[in-house]
Image (cartoon, rainbow, N blue to C red; front, side, top):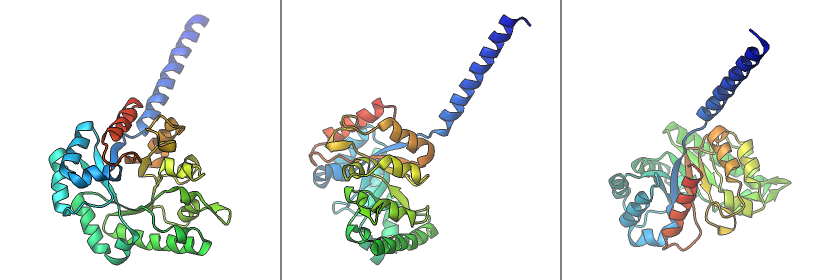
Length: 272
């Protein structure tokens, strides 16, 4: 083989190896379902939950996350979801429900068809002291053990206050350092950044714990119009985050379905 043929063969072989590496990397990424937290359109949902769900399905969302049931029975809600082809992406449920009615709360989630039971907040006072944070971590560990026994997952949702330093460590980081890996870490990108925290660092540190992520841009902007580095977020979620759901939460008019549709279009434009 002459030098030219050798170089050509070497180049093509290298190109093939590069393509195989690219393909292998792409195969490690996962397709993440797209949901919306109904709190974003809570007034519309309160007035007409079936109609709101149908509209959300028509937009192209895969599912919805609940923060209350608007006076409806879980069985009725499950039928509404099934009728329009939506799935339940999880719920935001108060810590009191898990403390006082754990079995009933689990049954509601099983009826809705979700494993994700997420505490949305209300424990700031406890998290903002060293002893309180430790006690909450121990409680989440106990609840997680009970949840695992019935094939469920308990988690905690981020707000800006969770970035507050507690003896030099963010309350969020302190909590998840002390909880078992099975406790779901529902990072809210916009919330945590607004509180002065670094959502990228937290998601990179706690590998596999971002099974559900709230995609919210900075400053209340429609997704893609703020300063969040979405390619970086998506790369974390789809390689090391273990993410099953991207959940849109918008802070605009709770009667207006237009903004959540714009958010979905933005996500689709970014290849989601």
